[in-house]
Length: 596
Image 1: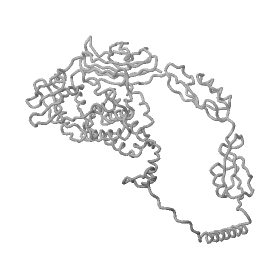
Image 2: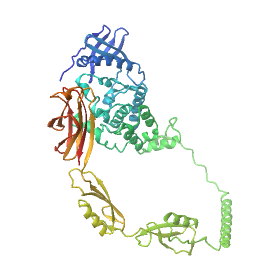
Image 3: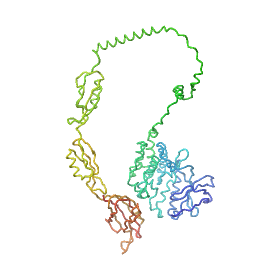
Image 4: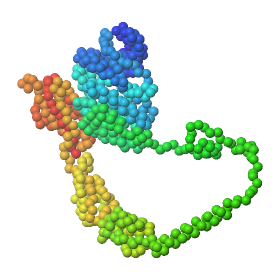
């Protein structure tokens, strides 16, 4: 692999002195430098020489750098200058000391409140750029710089989009970092602000869980997982409201995500702070005897410490002698008052009992035939409490009162407890285990047990069509109820992905996952210009590679015409089809179809 030369200790254009190499990316190397004219530290990104060999790309670089220089935001690394010194193309940006978010997440997941704070700052920086039609395309922790105060600055903003339109070979590939790449970037589709939202969602997921949602042994495998796989569940410590925001940001289709950074920032800001900060409080250690004394001494305030008198100090304190005993002349008076009050209360109680004919009584209402809530309401209206038990019954629906004790009409004391019996419905029947059986046989067994069945077909590569994959419920069910069966669907051709030539004669390379034993490429191809009048044409060709091993499994030329099909029986796996441009310009469309 070619390596860019290290040009530390050089001065570019007599102005920018390069001190030391501090980073390297796809497009170039970053040096800590100094602006000799303005006497300030700067970061200088020197573009790798093979990019500068393309005059189209150089012109686009200058145009895009000028656009990015107008993107001024506190959360975006500012670009100061762009230039070319001999064969060296470079741009100059503000130098920010401190680590990146990548350094921070290496030490483990962040607390939800801290992760949301960083993600919201990131989203607002993206929102500012999106409002000026600038898309980052490479949102990842290494491009998110953090200062000592926790402020976020986004670096390499928008530079990834410079690869579009290059005649350099590397420009034909998807641009971005695979672990943080949106599905549309992975398939080489059009990019929008929602692509940056996906990258921010991956960054937020990594902050909360400690790792990105998708990893793999190769860039192609990671890209395929972004295209097809749902992200694993976040840790249980992540609040559901925050997990819902992450899920939407990681939607496969751009239209299902937040449309831009502003919408994502508002969704994060709407999560209540107390939800993010909520966590079990640390247990308070038991207070020592002296500490307990201090609590009593200080009372309800802790504004100022209160001196605690220790035991040894208490023992040393001199006490005055007790006063001599004297006769309490008020004791007889208090005793006479207590007796008088007791007599009055007894008279009042006797009068109440006489007028009411004894203890207050309630008549037990009829509860049978009522639902639970209605029975509770009727009992409470009669000043009675109620307790429930249940038993199976073929005569009443589940939840209906079928018995009570005492019976309706009896007189009982206020607040007496009534015992009510609820129907648990008919006694359940045993559900036959039909998993693995043919669906017709399964339905017959369920019918013989007095049960109905509903069937849902689902694809299951490698399984016999019509086989029951799962059932619900599996053990017991009410008689006459329905058992849901999931059955292997009859195989058919299913479109996995499709793509087309750009019209400029360039090729394409697309990864995808195959689940069935066989699959096919359906395509249309037409030559452009006069090639169709020649005897021999050199059109595009298709190369098929098994990603796991790098093995080529097939190669064929695309023929001129419509409705062309090329079928392969390679089995399940992740594959990559590379369509070469050919020597004669042609237009083509390809659809990958899996049979399962």
